[in-house]
Length: 160
Image 1 (cartoon, rainbow, N blue to C red):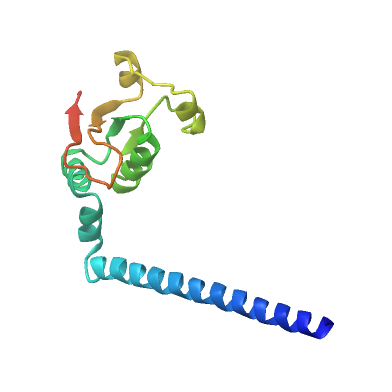
Image 2 (cartoon, rainbow, N blue to C red):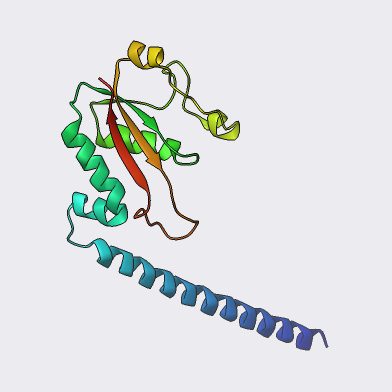
């Protein structure tokens, strides 16, 4: 009796393991195909072309800012909630060596501002004391879903 129970358990675990292995392999094959399609999508493109394909209007705006704003300028970025950190780091990277500000330079850019929904509104005195010569204004006009920046508004405002 004990032998039959052991054999049944053995086959039960073999069937369970085989089923798990089959499902896992199927998911892995699906993921490999998905990654392959993503790689093909950007294969052979330059860095600029890849970024333009990922963020079409936004990246064109960044390139426009790079052309129009002198390298020794300070830029204040005014953005919609939720995108502030992304825009700060994205602009800092692509517009270097220009100085990018999103709030007072003595305050940290951190989760504290997003959690407490603190909006920093620069005064003329603050802009002058921090030598800000341009303001980048971004307004999002889309619903949740796939990334589509075709309706978003990007503006570069010269203040000096």
